[in-house]
Length: 77
Picture 1 (cartoon, one colour):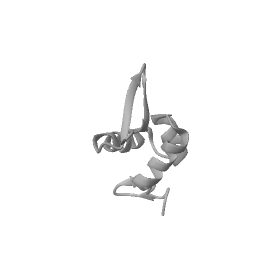
Picture 2 (spheres, one colour):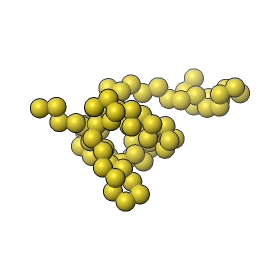
Picture 3 (cartoon, rainbow, N blue to C red):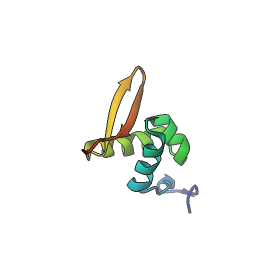
């Protein structure tokens, strides 16, 4: 029921796994929060929350460039 509304909670959030997010970011090499939001049809806040969590988990690096963050896969070597 992706994209439908629920009167208690509003729009359902599209389910995307961490692996899918990381695969997309790895293919693009460096992404902005907006690019992730647009690619997965997320609200900007949802994309930001997911990316921050992956950063806290050590999966992503981030850099603030002006009014935007850019994200890339953590080099684990």
